[in-house]
Length: 286
Image (tube, rainbow, N blue to C red):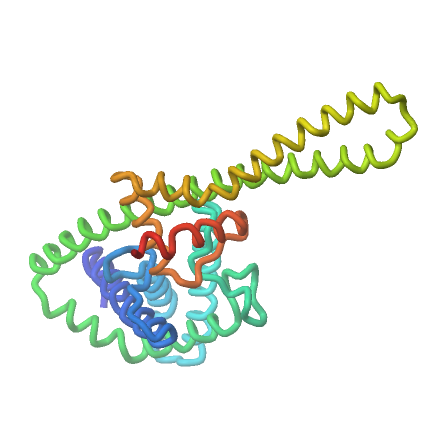
């Protein structure tokens, strides 16, 4: 059977929704609480829709050969998952899924267990499940199908645009927090170096020279203390910023994005990511 463009879009959206049902139920059971899983706010997971579409493109020509379907589906979906994960991390500085704790993983984006699951999914999809979805799309008139696809396209495009904006805002916050951390570490290192030098070679220098160095050192220590005080007060300052009407809404959305992805991590900004979670998890929820 030859699929029209509208049918391919319908298949994509259908499997996005089916993937959301699977992931949400799975994660909710693991967390023992309801988790609206996914990058988007609505009930769609594009990685599943994309994976299903890629699998179908490569496996439908030999849908009667289960072994070949398993291998080709596993490889094609795994390649898609890797490059999607890598691209999202590069763009947003956050991994929204991470397999680093799994054995035989590649850069945390894919792992053997996930790849095998894709293979099994490919067999179920191509040999059995897709036949029902194909019949569903075929029994609808062209006009009805196009209307459904159009409405879903508009809804998902708006949802995706909002979700991307939230992810970009989160990236900017992490970069800002990371820069503050780096300034603090740089000054701390400077003080340590001056202190070590002061405790060693400077003992042999003149009293006047020692007084100058000591004055500079004390000045540096005062700066360090002020920076340390700022760091200790950063939670209050952060939350004051968050509590402004517009900012609170934005931080709330970013926090919701991370709640939908409870396994998200940031390898680029680990300390900043940890601080963000510490600052927002309790306060924004309340």
